[in-house]
Length: 179
Image: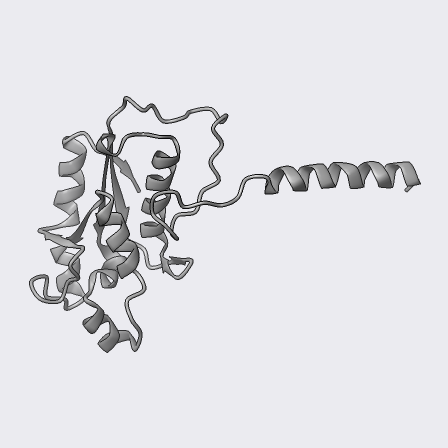
């Protein structure tokens, strides 16, 4: 490769790299969770006048940054809405925990008994609920994991009869499903 081609590749590479690094990852609302890089010039911006009603199906056990990946995804949604200056009263988010995600709803005491570690999701759940997100737990899934919904569920979670009822009910009430 000639010296000119090498220099051209280097200049283009540096330009692309510096552009990609121009915006830092931020967590403008749910501090520490759901990192975003907000681009105010991107297409399909949320409308500040729209009512956003979204239900998240939290049913997996994968992790992102040490917490449940799907709960982290809820934080990302909230951060994106905040970065776009959508008023909090226009954002209605619900997370329905079921399936293999169910253990994240346990109290810290029960979680420690079963996992020899603290529940890493509690701080995220606190921050989500402090910012208006409702978090529900499927009673059927709780029963499947031998979790008593009256005494063994953390304070940020509200038991519902079933995800099979809650998710379609929320959809009938106008919530869009984010699977």
